[in-house]
Length: 147
Image (tube, rainbow, N blue to C red; front, side, top):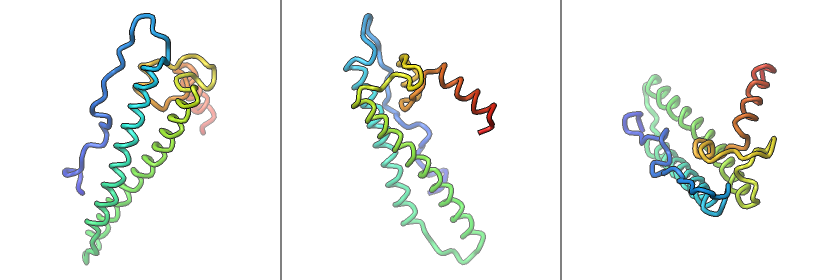
């Protein structure tokens, strides 16, 4: 599947609508938990569909080109696709861990300091485990240590 024919994968969750908080609503109430559970399940479903499309594409389009340049191009395309799928496989694992956190009642709170991560941050990054302050500190430490 060439880049021209490939469905847009950078914009998963096309039907996403932001959560509308109600005045006086408790953080991570049932409605919010349901909202994020739906986001994570939809995201996982879309990633799994991409995996299926890749497998089908690689089966259908695999050809043994006599020209070495054509063969190399196809192998490079498949290699890039497999790397993308590997990153998505890791993301699916992270989504599963996040769904587990929801089941345990830990979702939405920072692993490091315990404060609320925030609705908007979670909508931007549903698998976030650190509040913005702790994440910023972790990134600074990472840069300083060169890890």
